[in-house]
Length: 496
View 1 (cartoon, helix red, strand yellow):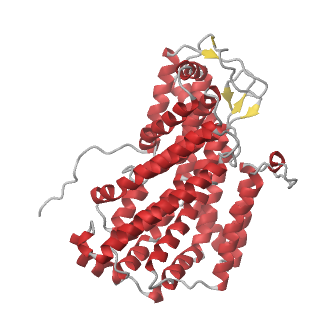
View 2 (view 1 turned 135 degrees about the vertical axis):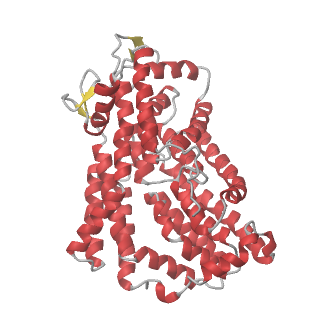
View 3 (view 1 turned 135 degrees about the horizontal axis):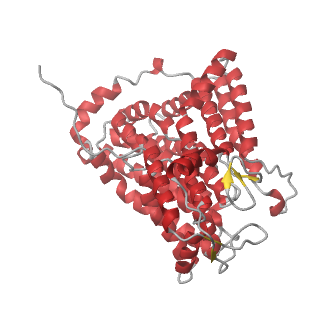
């Protein structure tokens, strides 16, 4: 018998491994980098030019490094700036964010279990038969809404078989089907408006409201989605007119045989009145969250302001998860089990938030955060805010490759980048937008992002061909959000 040998080669480490290595690097840095502090203003923000060196407080890998993960999750910040679960002071940990992530996982699992989302997508695809151009536009818009509201990513894997089959049946190719799902949801995530895993986490650790920067993100979402629709539709119509123009033409017969056999109406859920009601409840949960964070008092509209944050968010989605479960006739046991299973699927994200927060704890307790800020301040003295914000989103491209978890990336970087925005005299929301735009753009092609490789495998599209197809669109999207970020520097509080 021939012995199957597993191919050996470099395997990119997981997000957890990268974060643990980063903790070690930061611990070592506390022994090398001079300790220092800024004087703070009444709002607790560093005063430019007030940095001064202080006595060092080097950390240790075992006693401080590993404990920082616990303190990063549950920690309390004392008046002297140190962070520990034993201190008495201001709540500093990431437990509220992590718990909210778990609740969102349960909420999404219950909604998916009812079949409402699947039925809605299938209703759109069958209702637009013969109007394929509109089908591409509407489906991409639906996926973009999912991406911008709750970071729809892993959930898209359930739709590739159906969407690819529908597109092939309409005379397009498998690449069009993959693009509708991946680009649609990807642009939504890139322009996350209220995505709790990106915008929510980043805003929390930047110390701003999730509503800050909403206009710029909405602009990127609308214009970016329109650009994506035009890009995909042009390719799709070119393929339908001449199938040999398809980038996956060599698999045309094979793909038609594979996908069209799965396109059977009897296997798809019905978009019943009950499922329509569930989708309304699903949308209502996000609308309430959006309303709860908008600073109505600052807008002078006289509308009651809720000032909710992650504790209230968790309660909100927990409530709607239960309501959706009962409307979907799931029963108490099914609701409980589905919610727990959904939360379990998000456990890795929640743990990443805690581990990532530990990096900030070590830097803070080692008194090197302000030193890094002071070094950056020296560089920023010679560059304007527009240069700073564009350098920021360029920096997030390689960082996103190293840390593909959007929550982990935000947790690690925002405590550093947000104060740098103050020094550069730009709004912190621009840093949040730069982070999520760059991270979202990279995740359209990031091979360390399971959704990319999984989606391409389900659509039977090679990675190299996907890169060739999506590269021009990525350049356009890059220029789009770079222009929006630059405009935000020159028109603060006016347009963006």
